[in-house]
Image (cartoon, rainbow, N blue to C red):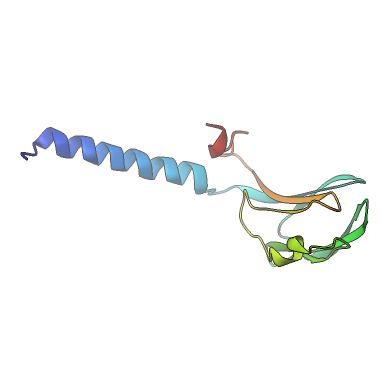
Length: 123
């Protein structure tokens, strides 16, 4: 197997393109993370920098959500399986927690100058 200079150049370009794509998709430099909560009463957006306890209404009752230190988690929910509580705390854009029995969906979204309105999964 004889490798030539062109082979190394192509390999270098491929690695550079992969690193660049990863930084553009997952880097998030300068963007603002927002918490998006959807329940039966509507949809709400909060900046992730806030520290507060939120109550979200669903068909089964109230789901308590804690927004603290740049993370969000479900404290309590009237659902039987409690998977939303077991999910723990989420901190990064693209992560989400769902309480399907109570119809509550929590997600972290990005918004900023570099966001462009399209995420990496859309491409």
